[in-house]
Length: 271
Image 1 (tube, one colour):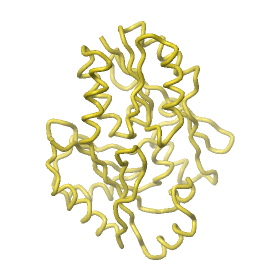
Image 2: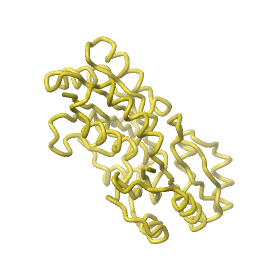
Image 3: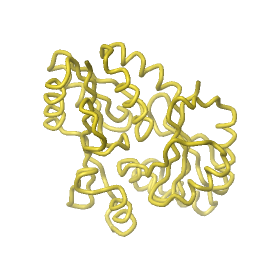
């Protein structure tokens, strides 16, 4: 039997659900000198309200060795093997820390998911569905599944991408002046990547609709509609897409800190 450990960037809150073979490690969000454990000390709605009103730009901290070690010990007490599925190694040093802890233990494995938010949630759910298989078999299955998972999203503003160092402040200023709405994804290397630059949110939505229309969505897997803070743009995107989604999800604070409020997107698996 396999026990699964992930982090709160998966859009799964610590303690959410009752699956005894899943543990979610909370990531830490820092506003100035104040630290909050994601999903424990601060909820998603509270985070976005603070993001909107605070003068301090939020930062996130990597998982620490102690919390990983403790989660692994609990996982080994529940199952024969433990599989850790953290945020992409390209987005956080948490993966490396998980790998270093895993090396100290027999029957503990870590997989570079090369993704985050509900993309990661999809991998976690797939791993749990296959918990009776070996960790090696599950990792192989997840690596194949990850190649089919697609994300397309549009930030409403470039300000937070600039504050987080994802783009230059000059590019953000110019982009805002030109009303540029970039379409972004998480690519096969687990990096946030630009798909297109469109002049207006509506054109960005049209671009996403074109991508989805060319895809063959696997409706046996979850389809997630994404939004940050408010869902008005996501509702508009949904009406344009005409795609039946499984769940509408507020983007987790770790990613929301870089995307900002009023973003919209979709995550799905191809056949």
